[in-house]
Image (cartoon, rainbow, N blue to C red; front, side, top):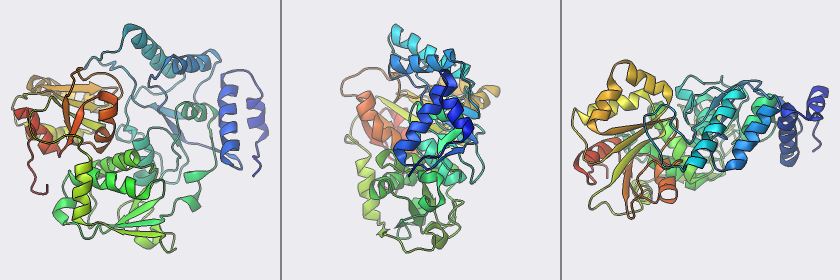
Length: 417
């Protein structure tokens, strides 16, 4: 299919400055993907400001030198440094300097220094049906599924190019015909108590991601809205263990008022009836080490913790001190609330290490320790932590994580295990 460009798009792409570089990246991507045109976008969320090497910093600085600025609202995903000073990492000085330069360059381009993987919790919530260009897998799946905006999984550097151009290629999940569900995942055989627990949704998301892969699936059999934090955890796990960019939950998410609408009134290509045994297997898969013995740390907040999740953390701690550090990753939007009423100080006195602007899986914050074991309630942490940190992982609920941090060993509190 031939790509049609407007006179303005051709004119910008023909230049030699920063906006021209961005437009050419978007145009060539559109050609590669077979898109017929570019479409205007309402906003962007930028994943490319996380330091992976000097080339990323130099690319961002080249855009700055070329006079580029974002044309739409653009929030920033996590960086490699905690600029708030809540936590410290072990990056070597040269890499630290390049990471800081990179974060500075993206701010100079006009991006908002939100530094969170959950911009939807920080007020960036595009309207249902609007086209956007978001990076960061959990943000993409939440944006598509829970907010009903339209974005593909935009990778590093294409995300900022779209933000500068104010355009995205018209393909994939921007198009209505690609957003209907093809796979039905029926959870009606699971108990209501399980689906109401916070331990359930990362497990279900991990299973869902492996089951549907890149397809669009719809979950049916959910009797009540599980809440945004549960959907956040579900989407993050499904995007990590699969390549999910959009899911529907019948009767819950905006494009699925009922199962038939989610399917586009077409028969499904596959039906998966989920059993408790499947969930038990999926839960086991989230741990890479046995649950016996001591743990070295607990990490929560991938995606970043909401204020409501901090409320639950404080309630579970109940004034107790921790035997091992509990790393609580969050964004500045939540940190500001904690600092406004002294809650940050009380959490830190208990032994909680608040990590803002970044997280323990993308930058070296956890101490180096051969054979170390990490407990988490995050399906995404469970997926990435072994490879990124070297720590073995035990998965549990938030209550499990709190009790385990208090006692320094794996403790399981729920009767659903």
